[in-house]
Length: 362
Image (cartoon, rainbow, N blue to C red; front, side, top):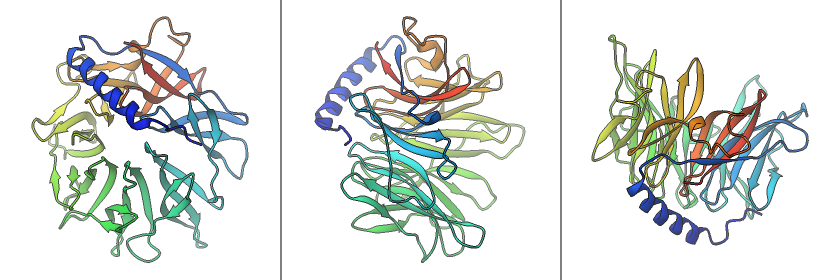
């Protein structure tokens, strides 16, 4: 059973402490590393999501040809346990784990015609799996995120075959939130207030990051990084409870990680720093505006950390030198940063991927 007792109190205390620390933070955090290891039968692991209790949803590469990839849940108190569901006839692509133990994702099965049918799902330990259906009968849907009110956001195929951003809840079912007039849209993240971060398609083929409100009102967030006359695209990937959004913007030849707020607009998180000319992606943001993502260094994507006071850093430079794994790991692909500042990411040890959690010690 997921260990989320006293979570609300823990989140409140963490937010107060982190807010006070952030206001006076003169240096970026220093982290200790927890390697989640390789469960029996696994050749590699990687995280998918992290919640505010420090619990990790992940997946492992296993030798079983019928499974290939096996999901797991991890907590500091309980260790790793396999996450097995009744959906054993196809493939499950995992999306997010919220603070109440809901898991969201996409279930894929062969359609008998050489293709696949996909359907978003939500799972809880007490109620099992619930398939969410589609916008049209038999239509595909893809679940990407779930908030603590069990509202799910994702993308579903509309009657004309175009992708449409949707929001689902137990009371409303699946609601189409495609912006009026847009050829299509994608839903990526949702906060506690029902605000959605996503991407809309424009008529000329460009993409724009958007925020969609709980009543369906939407706002384009703009674009940064256009150069040499190339079309500029932007995609929103994360949103916190303050409505701050992170994502990636730029052209096909260059990407810029951004943070957006209603007050300050869209800002390049690498601007003015040592990584200003690097490929950067902002993936997730927590309640106090700490951001994780990736940056390209020597043709390799490294895990990155950003906050407004300290700018953008390679996470490898922030590991406590006294940690047993300091200098031994290549950190890639952060998937989340929680209210306590913990980060879930992949780390390579001797070429093997391990799911890891970084915990701030300063």
